[in-house]
Length: 441
Image 1 (tube, helix red, strand yellow):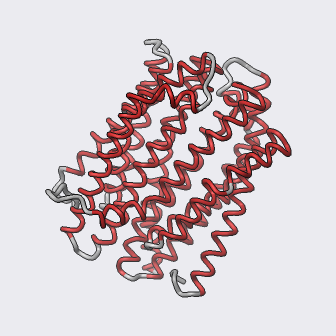
Image 2 (cartoon, helix red, strand yellow):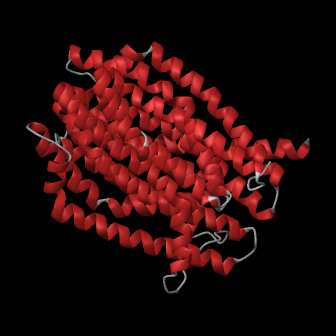
């Protein structure tokens, strides 16, 4: 009983702090959405939504390295292999630096082409190009911030990780207002505020890096293909999850552009960005569970790992009920917050979308938690399969098929139907592995 209470308290501490931090992190873009809608109207909102998928690719790359590296770090840490801990951290930074250079070069030389590929037109095109170029130039800040947040949290300091994420988000909100309204920088102000947030977050995290209790350090070592491969393998479900949200946004934007033009894209932007916040809650639960499950796995403690998973699922289902009821009954109010011009078409599309799209929340939450559980116990393949199913294999053809059959209504339902199918596939995969003795029972 005492052991169970201890497991619950550790789960509650890590999860609560991490959910708060992830909500703060996801509010980077939500704050942009709010201030851009107020300052730049429907075209600004459409431009922001067209550019956000690129942010998802950057953030997803950072999470891939951060979660993959920190998961491997947690497992070797309980095995008292300090030299391997330092090598894992250093090799994770090597990959972060390489990806940062690639993103920055893309921003310098290919922002025009990206703007065209994303389908921006009219007034929205110029704003989309500005946002893309600047967000790509800030890629090093986003990547290294994600890496440091994950390593600091897995090094026993979830409070500092949460503080860094929240204060970074608060700074983004304040700077959004200052840059867009008093300074009148428009879309440039929005993206500068977003890029400044991870810089502040890293300054806060630096407190942990200079402490003597810090258990990971830079080490003079050559890049290790084995370590890098392991980090990427464990982290790639997180990359797929973020990349898929970006790709899905591109597909949905394209279909909405055909169905109802920039107004449809703007309405979808409201829902997509709110969805980032909701999904961040489930990601926060999953990432809060991860250090506990990885340590339990490293020690061979099956009971602690499975109890943590049960706590996570119960928490997710409880929050899902609250989230959906809140969105359903407040859909008109939520849409109105981002509809500064009082556009009736925008309002109608957004209200309908909110009620349909978010029926996915319990299924999406389960899929995220189960994928994280597989990753935390070094079972990368089933985690990859779940991520691919919900991110690429099902959602994209479902979007085209259902939008063809039922226009906007079908498109809104593509997300919940996909998540429901993947939820069923995940449960079957878990039961099959359990029968073979390949997962904790």
